[in-house]
Length: 243
Image (cartoon, rainbow, N blue to C red; front, side, top):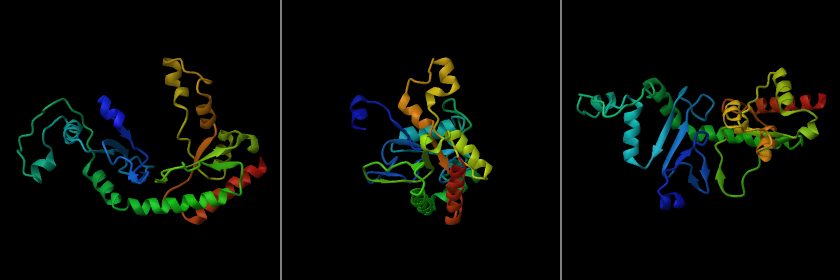
């Protein structure tokens, strides 16, 4: 942030997965401008949509205009705050506002975010404990500094040398046992668009590719129980036993 301030560089913090996360004792998005996602698999959801946080009131006023046709006031301003009912377009805008129902759903969950994270943390710690018995499957390590993890996802790295199978085969075999997994972080430069339009190719970022080929996400959501976690881990053991 200090470098950005000196160079007058605008920073927008991508906090899509990080609602409730803390870095060195401070909440992610505490300063400056940040964006959060409320997609269905995030820690709280509005179905679709998200949230912008900023300490720049001018920027927030602009975002409010742009989300709703560029109008200077919206229905809330007119009916609740008693502002001028003659809404006028101040600049070209979009139709990006949440519905009232979606917003109400998000607000009702926002007050419960700490409880959601606590439950996710308990499940993640159970996963870590049980997976110590399976050296072929490695949860990601915590960084060497103080954090509070929101546990949006529980990501593991598949040791393909020890398992004798690829990460994709591992995911397919778990699916056959009715265990769903996720693949959330494919190496960006290997997506078709970048390979076709920017001549990206495998081998350009070997460390990124190595990790991308081995990580996947195990089921994690607040309604899971310890028995569910045990079911997932037992399914992993069965998959690896059959090889």
